[in-house]
Image (cartoon, rainbow, N blue to C red; front, side, top):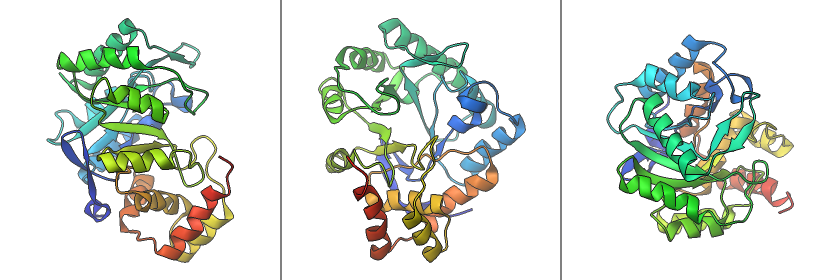
Length: 292
C-alpha cells in the first residue's frame, strides 16, 4: 500500500497521526444499522488499515449500534501503541434505526461507558460531542451544559481529549471556554465549503479539522470539473476530492470509510497524489460556484 508519510502528519491531542485515517461507519449494516454484510471482510479491512500504518480511526458506539466498536475490538485489541481511536457522543439509535439525541448528563455518561466497554479500553482517547443539528448541518444554540459534562468526565480520567462535531464556529468557541478542544469534525468537501473560515482559524490554533462526508456522503459528489481533473492526473474522482482536502489546509485529517480492502487501498493511495496549482484552481471553482 501507499506510504502514508507522504501525506504528512498532524497533532491530534498529544499524538502525531497520519493525515489519512480510517472511518469505521461503513462497517455496520445498511443505514449504519445492524451487523456488517460480511463480518470477515470488516475484520480484514480494519487489520489492513492498521497494517498499512493508519493510526487514527473514527468510530462511535451509535454506529450499529455497538457494531463498529465491537468489530474494532475484535480486530485490533490489544491495540497498537499510538493508535488514536476517536468516538462520538450525543446520540442513540432507535429500534427503527432512527437517530435520536442523547445529550442529557446521564445519556452522555452512558455513552462513555458504552464506548469503554465495547472498545475494551479504560480511557477514550478522544470523544467528540456530536451536536444534533439540522440534518447533517449545524444549527446555532448553546452546547455549554453538554460540553461541561464531558469536561467533567475528562477530569475523571475517562476521556483523554475532547472534540466537537457538527458545530458552528460560535459553538466551537463556547466549548473552548470550558475545556481544550482537540479536534473539530464537520461536514466539508470540495463542493461544501461553508467551514472555510473555521478551518483557517483552527489551523492558526494548531487544531485539526476532520471533515465528515468528504466525498459527499449519502449524495456522492457529482462534478464534471472533478471528473476532468481526475482524468488529467490519472486518479479517480473520489481520490481527487480527497487529495484536494489534503492540499486545502495542513490541519485537515481524512477519515474516509470503506468495507472493502481494495477500496481502502484506493483511499490510502491518495498520499501519492500531488495536486498542482492548476488542478487546485479548477477544483476550488467547484465550491465557489455553490451558494453559501
